[in-house]
Length: 100
Image (cartoon, rainbow, N blue to C red; front, side, top):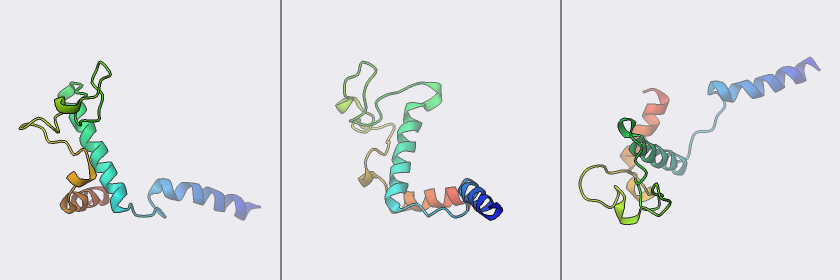
């Protein structure tokens, strides 16, 4: 009984400590990078900017489309799609989360 309880506790705690977790796939890293890029654009300098990517929604609920930072030339260049994320981006993300 005690072994079963101890095993259950260890199984619950190890993932939260970062042990026993499977490495993220490249696709999962790409999704994280895109999500982070969109969030950084939206929350820039304490202002809420809703139109990072064409498929985002503006304050009035409409699709951003051509009003998005992704489409407009110059300025911010948020990563909206998997094709925008380079191998260097993936490697930098992995290095950052591993603490290297």
